[in-house]
Length: 130
Image 1: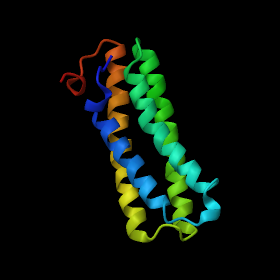
Image 2: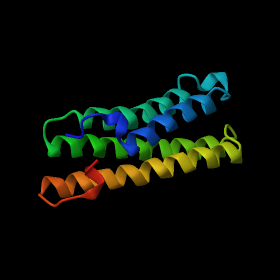
Image 3: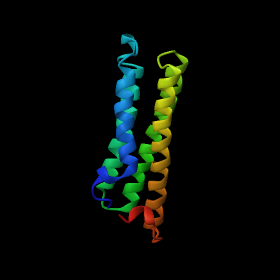
Image 4: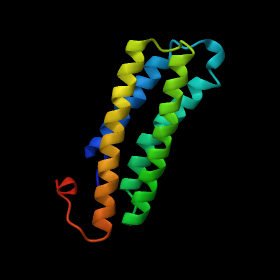
């Protein structure tokens, strides 16, 4: 498959998003430690981990399945960001920074998933030749 997942832009953005989520949640109320903090961190890690795991799979179908799971975790994280802002745990600047990282991750993940799907049906894709 893709070989080294670290070379994938989608994984790089997801990895940056994990770090940003960890940094942002350090300031959340302590009583959210096993609630929202844990959920946000788990969802963010799931995005990067599923991209990495998918890249090691032996079939395009399996790879696409892991990327789809990553996309679901990214949607979950988007809601967590939203509710964190509504609850006042994230100020507007922090929220916008995380949202921008989220969007970049979503954009590149979508592109990767589309490229894998095209490749699985035999259509050449410049996004996968590197």
